Image 1: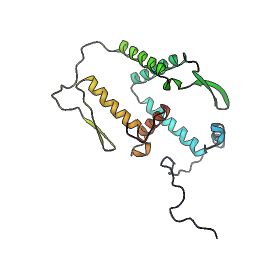
Image 2: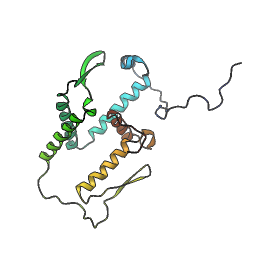
Image 3: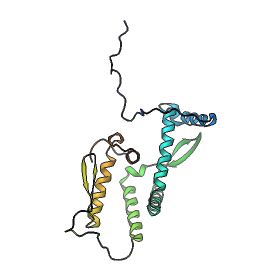
Image 4: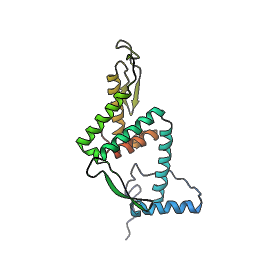
Length: 213
């Protein structure tokens, strides 16, 4: 006798599994390009056409988000990437072989992330660059210690005051806010754009998510 599965039985879907359905029409040549990309990515194992579409859509939203940033902030991100590239080039194994669009090529790896020597060199180099770029003039805080806080941010029931009495106070508050978001899973948030970007950053930095920092 074949035993029927009870209602609600079976493997529970992962919170990361896409659930919204959308039927789209596209040119045949575009679908073939997507299918070829799926076949090349991880040799086609564990990667579906849906995964490829969602991946490429998310990348397009990431680019739009980056384009909306302050130009000076984008420039600093570029400088930090250049610092990492130069320092990483001094390692014994700064590149790794990967397959992209059917072509084998050597690309930089993230070994510096787990190497205390090179990580500190990157931090020191960027600190020196920021010191050189620091604007001249007297530093004037927007509020004194006797005045109330500038505001606060609430995320998932957690309260993050945003003081601006000293640069150090503001920096510590921003640090706590960023690290809290890095530790969260995307499905914990109601809004998806920034949490997804934070989740991608956490994975790239090899951080453990789902626990408070």
